[in-house]
Image 1 (cartoon, rainbow, N blue to C red):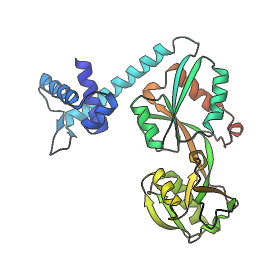
Image 2 (image 1 turned 180 degrees about the horizontal axis):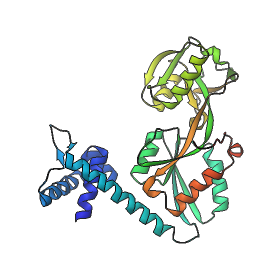
Image 3 (image 1 turned 135 degrees about the horizontal axis):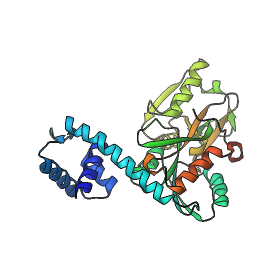
Length: 299
């Protein structure tokens, strides 16, 4: 009983709400609420304040979170150790990815070396891939460069060029490439500030004193895609995230190399699983050029 109570407390404390914790644990919200109340009653203390509809950790709650984080990290290490107690790598690897390329080439090499491992792939945007890890629906993810996260182990998979994309009715749709200076003053659709792709593009434009004219700022890659398809402006995207779409034409930048990092990610508590560990070791060792991207050393 104490274990499930601590697990519910930890999930709510980490996620910030009972609703999110319910999705992570796949447990009903009333059950989680009851378990936390029972934990508080058992030790006659308050772990959360409840101003209005919000939940805030008390000082005791913050101290307990520090302990439960270590507890569940160690639990994950123990599970990984037991799973990897034999040398033969077998089982099923669930991969989440923002795009099929160059993942499929990598998986061809992986399966050639580890024929006893079956693989399933689920495509989505970076946040969906990360959520799949948190929900333990996937074991590893391949995403465009992400920010550091205390729960996520990040291994550089490679780097890919950023490309421009336009609607097929745009005046550039008959071209195969553009020069960076061609973007001067052009209407552009961008992700929100903080997007890694936006940061590297705006840095390149600033270095060359090229004016960017962001006419629309949206909160997801899918929204950028739809806005460009509808003719609102020009978009930028890493090659790994390109998806076939008859409404869209991708153009390379011929005179300037703008790159974004591709990361392989997993939950830190899952890194010791034999199949996950083997996958990440192969990511470290792979020849990026054979997969169509640049492989640079991890920083």
